Image (cartoon, rainbow, N blue to C red; front, side):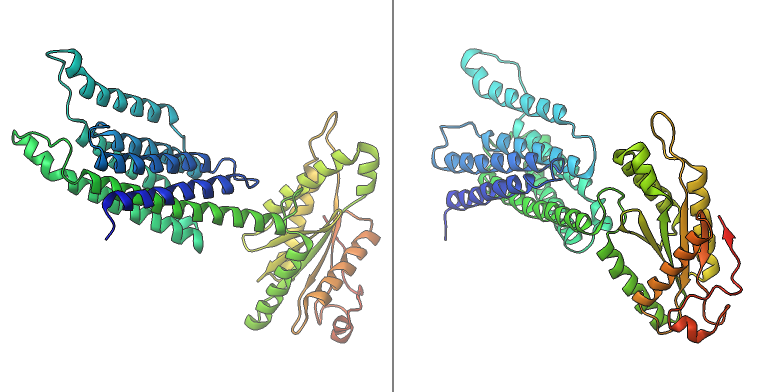
Length: 419
């Protein structure tokens, strides 16, 4: 069986490796404020603590007994700050720095003061105080991560849950290890310096920091993966789904509507005279108009609706469980909101309108045929003068069902709906 100083050095090597992992994740775009730098520094401090623990066991006269605890305190402090950054909480780096400086000064005073003063001012024993600080920092770390457990999914949730469980277990073990000698001190005894199990406790804490670092790295990796997936599926300019991702959602919605025999309505939206906006105001102003419209689009959509940008100034909406009339009301709200809310710009706001074509899915219809009918409804809206909502008739609503099934747009008996 390995001796304890070999085991703790192995833990230090793992901590050093986790520091490298945190640095690599930190270099990924979008991960600048995920606390990974603090965790890399914390793992480096944990590796130093493992070296100090080994030296303490082999050459106890070289170091003060609390040196390993001080290194662990520094490691837990920066990790707690990093966890706060990851959770979007204030980092409180300054109080953590002050805590570590005060602890270091107190340990130095206890060790050096008897050499220079016959009756130095008495200070409380630092070992139980440092262990108490370890427990508080572990609990603060858990407090930052606990909200991530229900809000995360898949790997991220499992990693957050494992981190919280490790932290609570470590805090409990630290409290139990210090309880008996603390009770003896309360009854008038002296605190053992160093504690008989001080090396084992330090080894445990180093392994704990390595374990929580693995969980934290998995959480950071899950956040990075979700960020990259969002960038791959969403338009950078408007924040709505890209064409490919939107089409996947539309096909899935058609399959679900077919299975559950529920209505499904789609809307094809086009910004009127967008080329003129680019020519008159410039392409940067045109981008501002697209962003502005996307914001109004998200507000108009329901919680289950899916919005996407099909290209240029063309957008689309999938409205599950929505009949044609419900979809029409949603599109009317959107068109009215666009018309009455110009895009902020200098020197004057840019007023614009939209044309919308609606179609409701009928039994057996796929995504391609459904979008073709919505596209023809949009073309009809443009023929009517733009700035309106036009509906492709459902089977049996104006025109024959055979004509609808063939994809021929039938306008007979369909009233114009002005937005």
